[in-house]
Image (cartoon, rainbow, N blue to C red; front, side):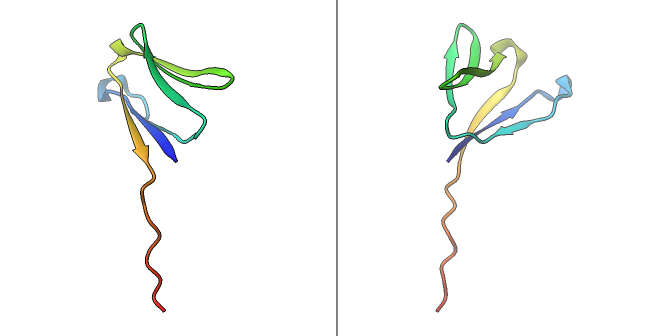
Length: 67
């Protein structure tokens, strides 16, 4: 399941946010990063804010079973 980690510049004194919602999509539009689902926009971040958005995929495989 993809998730998005939003990291704000340290001088903005905002907490980093991890958003885990498989229904969300990320698109870039007119200088904005826009996270949306079927109902519309959930979060929009202006490019001038300096935040970075990283996609985080859950790629961990289950530990092998000994038996």
